[in-house]
Amino acid sequence: MRYKVYWRKAGIKPEIGSKFLDIVNQKKPKNFLEIGVYTGVTARNVLDLQSRLFNNDFSYLGIDLFEDYKPSDEKEIAPNYIRSNNQYLSNPLKHLVYNVILKEQLNSIKSVYNFLKKYKDNVKLIKGNSIEVLPTIDLSIYDMIFIDGGHSYETISSELKLIHKRAKKNCLILVDDYFHHEAPGIKKAVDELVKENDYKLKVHHNRFAEILL
Ligand SMILES: C[S@@+](CC[C@H](N)C(=O)[O-])C[C@H]1O[C@@H](n2cnc3c(N)ncnc32)[C@H](O)[C@@H]1O
Image (tube, rainbow, N blue to C red; front, side, top):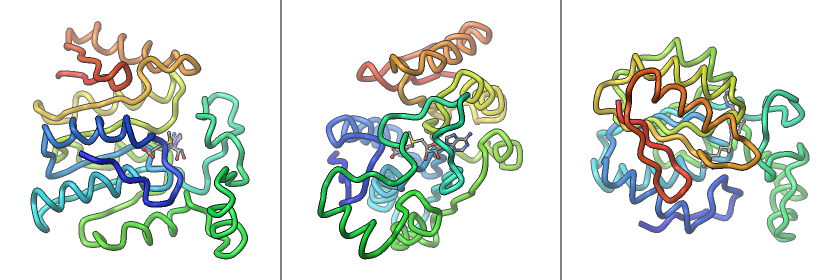
């Protein structure tokens, strides 16, 4: 499966994105939840795949702080590409188009909704902190949950606690950046949950941790 960047700025590089899409394609999730949407590139790739698999009968829910995200929050570990708040785009043409001409903040909820408008009947985005949003949604409908929001131990551990008991038994829970050297709290939180509950763990491509409930 080829992961397309769609001339935006993505949290996942195309090569690893394609491997991620292979995992999604194996699971074939009708209902998909992503925590950490950023500019919506992974969302769009998942939606393209769901649309090929299910015509119109599928859903995608994305939770993110969107433009309210503050990379300076000292508790959070922000990936390099979102550390600066000024929407730095290394490609000069992208900089010209998005920052100078369109003045479009790519991680704003408006920009992401617009980017995903082809699938407007299947997409819902919620702006908020995952820890506050997760308790308000019915997690039992999701076939796959991709956790790629806050990278601190506190955030991942809280998300996992909120998710694992309310997700359905065969839900595929995938956590990004399991071995990220700047975010060791991710591995710690995942390992704790797996150990405490006697779950099994499968790591894909040295990056994605799959928790088998
Ligand atoms: C690594 S990026 C997501 C990349 C995206 N999954 C992709 O593949 O392109 C992390 C995102 O998590 C969001 N985020 C960080 N902490 C969050 C929290 N506590 N609740 C909701 N979103 C959060 C940030 O706003 C940022 O957009």
